[in-house]
Amino acid sequence: MTHVSSDLAMTTCFTPPTFTSRVVPVIVLTDAAQAVPLAHALLEGGIDVMEITLRSDVALMAIEAVARAVPQMHLGAGTVTRVAEVPQVMNAGATFALSPGCTDALVDAVKTANLPFIPGVMTPGEVMRARDHGFNLMKLFPAAQAGGIGMLKALGSPLSDVRFCPTGGVSTDNLRELLALHNVAMVGGSWLTPADALRQGDWNRITQLAREATQLSQAE
Image (cartoon, rainbow, N blue to C red; front, side, top):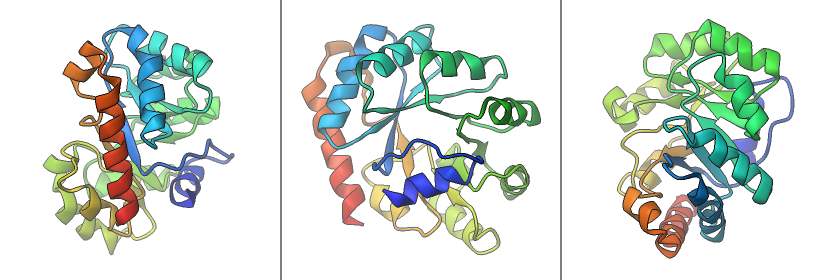
């Protein structure tokens, strides 16, 4: 889908991976063996992108497993907050990275590594600083605490050349309203991969949640 691919392209000087889904599952895994069946379940539900966060000891193993076994899945590494993590996620097979924030050191690292990157922002000043670094697609995080839909609307006029991936507080209740905003390229959320479904290996449930999110995102 051109909305996502063109905006992600603006974050770097090279062509990034192209994915069609406007919903990005934000995933925390405690067992790397869950990663591959999870990726297949999401694909079956129409979602071809996943953000595996570095919030557990198995994250890099999970990224490596998906990169090796499910090459059609566009694989992002989330919660990248340290310079040292940039080569780690690239070596594991991530094709882009996301962060809850944005530091000069991290920006330098991803640009040097030629890794597509979506920095996190919360205030107008942070948006302007990230834009000065050359980014036009940013993660509004935590979106609910930052003001949600109201904040995105407020940012839309003075910073009309920036688009966002709001994450934090996104659900099926506000998905369509968020995606209808002109400055929202996509949304991120953890509701697609509930901890109990992962623990139980309930891949049918995850496929159903993915399919529901896909249908809602296409309806706006």
